[in-house]
Amino acid sequence: MSRDNPADGLDDESVWKYRDLDGVNLCDGNAPTSTEARVVGTQADYKTTGQTLSIDPATGLTCQDADQDGQNCENYEVRFCCP
Ligand SMILES: [Ca+2]
Ligand SMILES: [Ca+2]
Figure (tube, rainbow, N blue to C red):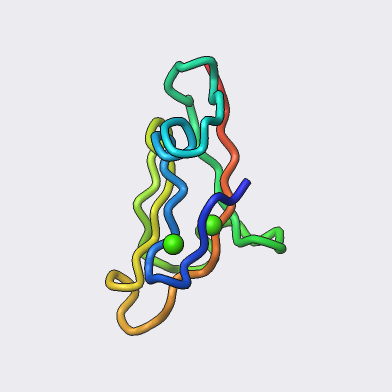
């Protein structure tokens, strides 16, 4: 799923935003055990883009243009695995 896009310079797929801003029940309140990510509309795993991301099993993914050395972030979608 993708809750945000990078048009404003940040693609924010944070777990807490899904929960607290979007009201999504993720893992019944438990921390996800993994976060998988790929580019929206493709099968391209995030690792294939070479972009500098913050990705963490429990907190989700963020991508900031400021970290991309002049490039813009792709729009990422994420999938969480629950314990
Ligand atoms: Ca955004
Ligand atoms: Ca996104």
